[in-house]
Length: 249
Image (cartoon, rainbow, N blue to C red; front, side, top):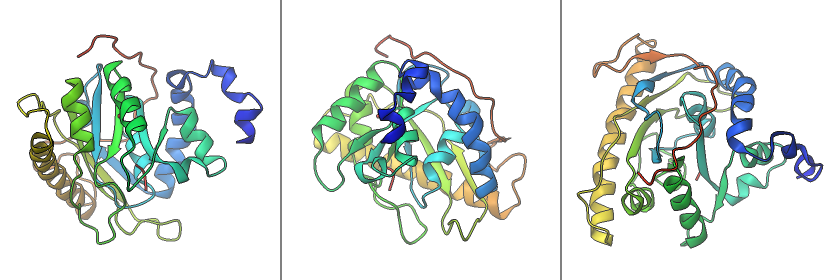
């Protein structure tokens, strides 16, 4: 990564919280130009404290869409191959993204995600593990809910409607945020994680349907569940709470 080797991250002290407003100010308008989009329910994202953003995954535009329509920085668990791409990979790394090896247990990435959530950050996880090819949310893997349960932080569900988007097919997209989900009632066991993942998956599917309704309805100001429409939000820098209250395909 040439720019990183040249020491560019030292300009902001290698602090992703410091560079995040800068990246968002310049990247988000490009994202919305490539995918005419709106976000709904942004006020539901917790203002501080750790959490796991759990989203479905339908197209390559999904990670920057989540970043553009989240009032706080999101640190993504990202497939290692994406971080190796020139420029794009560097930008993601500067924003705090860290690699996960898909298709195998990656204990180091899970440890890193847990530490970030514990420190008060929002960790972004595409909980199906990879992009879905048929336009519908797929089976939810338990990794994201496991991180939330083990660290005692909420799941922040996000439904994305972006199927069919591509650089040559710049379709409108939408995302809808749900209320934070407290999973403390579920045991710290494989069975508990699977049960929680099923509940979270149902909520993400509901939000995905609402996002589809938003696109089909020409982006109404309010959706059926009361979710309010928002454009790009001003970039702000938030410091994570230190109280003990982390793959893009």
